Structures are given as C-alpha cells and as structure tokens.
Amino acid sequence: MKTPLSSGEVHKQYEEGVGAFIRSVPDAALRLRLKGEVDDFFRSAALGVWQADGGTVTPGYVEYYNAIYLRGNPAPSILFWELGTSVSNCPPFQSPDFFHRMRAVDKVSRGQFSRRFIDLYTLMALLFAAVDGVVSDTEAGYVNQCTDVLTRLCDRDGLEGGKRPLDAKDFVTLRPAAGTDVPPAAVPVPAGEETEEEKAQPEPTLEELMAELDGLCGLSKVKADVKSLVNLVKVRKLREAEGLPVPPLSLHLVFMGNPGTGKTTVARLLAKLYHAIGVLSKGQLVEVDRSGLVAGFVGQTALKTQEVITKAIGGVLFIDEAYALTSHTGQNDFGQEAVEVLLKNMEDHRDDLVVIVAGYTDLMADFIHSNPGLESRFNKYFYFEDYTGEELFQIFQSMCGKNGYVMDEAAQTCARDVLQEMYADRDENFGNARDARNFFERSVACQSDRVAVLETVDKDTLMALTADDLKKAAGDGEETGE
Image (cartoon, rainbow, N blue to C red):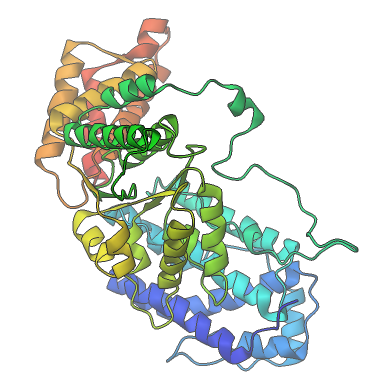
C-alpha cells in the first residue's frame, strides 16, 4: 500500500489539473460556467467513488473532501457524520449540466474539450480513489462506467477526437497473492502484440508493402521520402553484411502536416517495412497521444509512459499531437517527465524501437526544439501536404467502392464540385480525408432517408448515391458548420 496523500496534496493536484483545463477553454461563457459548477461536480464524483469502494469513510476523508475547491471559490466545511451520510446517499452518476454546454461548443468549433474533460474526470476520480493509498478494482470499474456515460454522449453528438479514453483499470493497485512475487492478473494481449490467429497469417513481403504504399492517394513527396529511407536502410544492411563501415543512422521520424493527411496510415506501413527489411523484430504500431502517456498526479506518468513504450518495443511508437507533451505551461505539468522517459528508452532500445512524432507543422518545430535530446534524435522530417480537391474526390470514390455504393455521372460531377469547393475554402480546421469521410457518411445518411420511404427497393437502388443525395449532404454539412 502506498502512503496516502495529504489533504494539501489533494487540493494542489486538484486545483492544478482542473484549473489548467478551465484556462485552456477558449469560450468565455463556458469558462465562467465551469468555474462556478465544476467543484460541486467533482465533490459528487468523490462521493460516488467512495460509495463504490464500500462506503466506509474515515475522518481523514473529510479533509480530502474539503480540499476539493478551486482558488477563489468557497471551501466546503463538511463534518464526518455529514460525509458518511452523503456517501451512503450518493445518487447514480449523471453528466453535469456544463458538459452539455461543452459539447455544444465543441460541435460548433469542432473542438475536443468534451473528450479531454473525460480524461480529466478519470484522473481526478482516481485522485480521490487513491486518498487511502489504494485504487481498488471496484473503484476503477466505477470510474470507467462513468466515463462510458460521457463518451456515449460525445459519440452521439458526432464529436471529433473519438480515441479510447484513459482506462482507470490501468491504475489499479495490484497486490501479490500469498506466497508469490507477481500480482495475479489476467493476461490480455497487449496493444501491439499479435494474437495466435494473427501470427498464423503470412507476413507481407517488401514488394507487397511498397505496392500498398504506391496505392495510397496523393502523398507523392512522402512516398518518395519513404522509398529513399527504405533504400538507405537496405544498403546499410548490405554494407554491414560485408563488414563495411556504416555511418550513424537515426530512423526516428517527424511527421508534419494537418489532420487527415494519412500520417497514421504511413506510420503503420513504415512499421511493417522496417520489419520486412530486418530493422525491427516485430513491426507493430502502437499509437498514442498525450493522454495515453501523461497522468495527472505524481508518480504515475513515468509508469504509464514506460508501459506504452514496452508494448512498442520491436515496432513503432506513433505519438500523435506530440507537441502537447511540452506545450502545457503549468508548474507541475508531467509532459516533460514523459519526454524524459521516452528519450531514455530511445537510447536503451535504439536497435529495436522507432519513434514517430506527428502534428501540425509549426507546433512540431517548437516541440523538437524544446529539448536538446529531441533535436539530436529526430533529424528526418516528412511533410504531409493537404489533399487537393481531386484527391479528395478519389478518396470519396474509394469509400463508395469499398462500401458498395455507386455514383452515376451526375453524382460524380456533384461530388467532385463539392470536394473541390471544400478544398478551395479550407481554413485551419480543414480535416482533409476526415472531411471527405464526413461528407461520405452524410451522403449515405441522406440516401438512406430517401430509400427508406420507397415502396419497392432493389439492389441497384440500395447501391445508388444520387446527385440529390450529395447536394443534400453538402447542405447538411454547411448547416452544422463542417
């Protein structure tokens, strides 16, 4: 059992975590609402966590509960008997009122604050669970149930950033069984490791992987860079085989460009290519962002980052929006701790681990220059340009083909015009292939509305996307601000 946190430490971590989140929200009205309502929500969250753990509280819990408040807000002064009653009578979890406002703001601005708040809730709830020095399995399960409620609301609203939220089970305090040194646990297949069924599948050849690379839409400069890198590594391996000297070579990469430009797809292919030419032992891709590396309280970030890196050894660790690790300015932000753990592992496993960091061009430059260790290890940059209108149309056509939809000539002309206009009007929120996918999904929804009311429907009707379907989908996108 770990030493329980003091009430002062609880308050410090709570105020830093919640305060930093509120300050990052650009909508002034939402910031004000959060400031006034968030303390009550998190106090209720603490009650729910403690109720899930059996409802037994000690006088020390009173100090922890009274430590949940932001600077400038009145501090609570609950008594022991009041806290015990409140824990016993705590109602089922409900999403807070401000979360509805947050989702509405995200829907208009295409932001991700609602998704980020879910991770904030997880970290704060775990902070409350750990006040006795232990995060129990029951507490973690309760926290995950609550985050599922919030996640479903975000999914229902079609909000972006739908990556898997933090799993509270990763923070459970494991205890060794009697007579053993290893905690008893199920043995799931870690991310990045193959199942027996996957191992039975023949591995793709280098030629097949290069053909897959060539089949990607657009990305001509990236394709050339990948081929050049693969050739460099192949020749290096041949020189090593002949006993010839080889210059130092870093295979870590920086992917720069806007969202939806194929960075993850290329990273996955590179992992397989590196494996095919004998650089990596496994060739898996482990994808993560800041929330998958950084925890919200002392002592957890290094463990969390190390766990992710361990899964990636033998393959590629792909860190999306990597600049978020160093862009936070809070006094006790733990992003830098994650960077230090990353750098150490890049050195310790330099022969069997490749790290690819990705994000917006300007922000990635700031990230690399934020630490001399990053500058020395990342010296290859791939720039992913925005897809052109014609390339977006090709992507849209591919989606239609893969999903069994057909466009006649009029529909193709309409789709091309819509996507050309989408490209011409792009701004800093342009989503590239993601916008094309959103347009495809709206088109399918409009087609379904049309077909559902027909008296007779045949296969051709079910497959046909018409110009009217596409025009309506384009109009729906304008109405929702996409």
